[in-house]
Image (tube, rainbow, N blue to C red; front, side, top):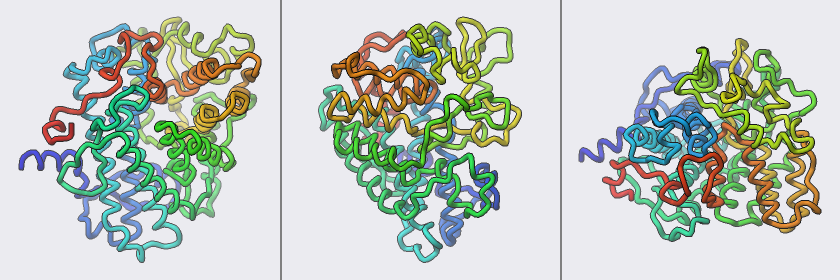
Length: 498
């Protein structure tokens, strides 16, 4: 009985959800903070109650133990060996994570927090979904479809990332029947049984397909940058890029189909997102990336298919990507200029102008010295009213081009997609003469993932999906499933979730 209570407290802490009503104005939508506790009956007696519950779920996703840090630019990029200082220290949890020391006491806490926070997000979606079909009459316009569709999509996305963290990748050769994670679809005190990779991905796809059908009623993308001046939009239908919108669901389906090596479906969904014309590459010649001014867009927000608004990003970015002392601080996340020059191939002809790299885009990087270079894409300047300065990218347009390239039937077709990203970043297109084998194509794709997703948490998933045995700049040795698969918290194994 105590175990069941513990499980309830851990994952179902939202039985009494805390939310406040949304006021008008975009800042209220983004900055709404839970302030009152309410019963389920009262919470879901109005449309606004459901909307508030959904907002609370996105806020939970932006928590630093979730996508607000650890399941993006924090833990995942430490595992991917992107922060050189973590390779040089062993005194904190990130230093031990860089060595895949999953038995370290602090590392155990980090992993347990990721697990419990992610399942808490899932619990909140199940809380929303459990009785929503019987409350359809409460909703106006398309809001029923939006609330239910987004809740299903969140549930699918979080399970997908849990699977990619706590389960072996298909390419690793692991037994397909191996138990991975539970797929929780009910708001219940009873823990679910861990399912195989196939069972979990089937459930993810089913949720995403249902979400796709629901969200088809509202495919509009309003672009974050325009919202401040667009007074005609109803508040709930604004900031679609900050929510799991119709196109984000299609993008997730592309990612899941790529994961299970269903290339035709991965290509189809990636192309649908590309062809939607709702997202576009930043203009590399005119984009203003100075983070200290209002027009700053160091995060390239126009390319976000889905990003999370994190209201306290300034605190996090100041703690990890900025130093006020004369020397780098222990918690900082930085690398060396030599590493960055290698990643962005600055010695290759016409590559130093890559707008993502340290040579061409000094305002996306802060160089303390040759061995201390920080990413400033999350830097929040004095002008904190700029929404773009508080976004954490979850799914980007470039990834859809990469998926399309990897899923293409011919090298020529693949290069067509890959070169669209490269030219948008102002570096030369690749030629079929130079890239004439699948091995060469895959190597270029790897380099693009490393350039594009620095401090965004995606490179670890790429390494694992492709079953890399050696990571660049690693202090963790040869890779295998013992390192790629995060161990489930000990108390979850007690529940029979192994």
